[in-house]
Length: 255
Image: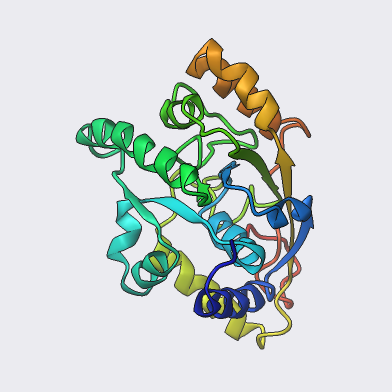
C-alpha cells in the first residue's frame, strides 16, 4: 500500500533536503514493492536514521513507526508524525510506567499487520552506545513476532554510516537533543552555501528475515534478540566516521 500523495510529497521534499548532507545507497529496495503487510526492524545508530529511512521508505510504500513520546512535543515534528500515523511510545528510560504500556502496544501492532498495514519498530528501543547494535533483553519485538499474523513479513533493515555523526552518541555518550542538533544542521547547510556541504555516505539495506525470525521466536526473546544483533552486526563493528562540517575545514570533525 502506497502512502498518500501529501505524505509522498513531504517525503520527497525532505529526501532532497537530506541529500545535501547524506549520500544514501539503498539495497534490496525491491522488497518494498510486494504489497504484503510488513514489520520493518531497523537498527538505531543515530537520531537522524529514522528521518533518512522514512524519507526513502515512503517513496515506495506506507508505514507507521513507533516513536518515543518526547518527539510528539516538538511542534513541527509532531505534525509530521501524525501525518505518517506514528504511534506514541512511552520513554522507558524515564518512566517505569511505560513498560506495561509498551506491552499493550504489541496487540495494536499485531492488529495493524493483520489488517495489511506496515509497521516500523526499533528492537533496541534506543540509540546504540557503540559501533555495534545491542538489543539486549528488550521484549517488545519478540511479543509482536510471537503473534505475527499469517502472511505478514518481517524485513530487517541494516543502516550503516551514521556512527560518529553528531546525531549519534559517539562523541558524548548521550542522546543528542533533537531541536538543537537540527538547528545546528540547518546552520551548516547555510554556512556551506547549501550545495557545498561535505556529504556522509550512508547505506540502508533491506532483507527478508521472516523465516529466520519465525525459527528463533519459539526460543524466547533472548534468542530472537541475539539473532537480530547478529543480523545488524554481520558486517562487523563500525568505526566512528568523522566528516567535516564545512568545505573550508582541513581537520575532519564529527558530523
